[in-house]
Image (cartoon, rainbow, N blue to C red; front, side, top):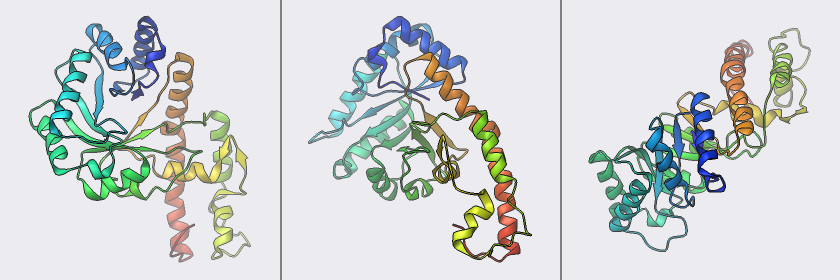
Length: 285
C-alpha cells in the first residue's frame, strides 16, 4: 500500500506517474485521509483515468473535541465526493481518542459497511491507543507503526495476529540489500553447532549460539529479528513515498525480505525449535 500524506507536495502529473509506477511494482492500494491536504482530490483525479487501486480513508480527525454519527457520515461523504467514487475498500477511525470511540460512533461506521460503502472498518492511531482499541473493539483491521529501527512493544500486534494488520513505515530508516542477506546467512550457518562448548542453558549465551556475535550492520540485528518475527503473512505494509527512486529502494528491499530473508528465517526457526527440544529449553531469549 502506498501512503498519501505527502501527495500534496506533488503536481498532478508527477503523482500520476508515481502511482502508475507503484502499480507496476505490485502496489494496488492507496491509503489517504481528509487530513492529508489535497490528497483525496488528487487521487480522485487519477482514479478517473486509472481505477485500478483499492482505497482506504479515515474519519474522526485527530485532535477533535467532539464527534457524533452525523459528523462521521458527513466526513465520509465528503471523502467520496473528493475522490469521485461510490465506495472504498477500508475505512479507519483516524487517531481518535479512545474516550470518543462511543457505541454511537462505532455503530455509525459499521452501518457504512453494512450498506456496502466499505469492505472493512478499522482503527489507525498511536500504538498505545491501538492496544486499547484491540482490547475494546472487534474491528476488521488495524494500523500499527513499527520498523526495524524504531522498535516498540509488539504485544498489541500479537493480539490481533488473525486480523488484517497494516504496518506503517515498516522499512523507515532501513534499506536492506543483498549484502545484508549475506551477513544474515553467515550468522545463521552456525545455528546447530552442537559441539559448541558454551553452556547451552545459559541465557546470555543463547543469542550467540543461534545468531553469532552481536554486531551492527546497516541495522541493529537484534531489532531486525524482532521486526521479522511480526512481519506476518497476513499483514499489509504502507510505504509513504513521493519519489520513484525511493519507491524502488523500498519495494526492492521489501521483496528481498519477503522472498529471501523470511524463508531463511523460517527455515532457521525450524532448526531453533529442534535445538530447543534437544536441550530441553523452556524459553528462548
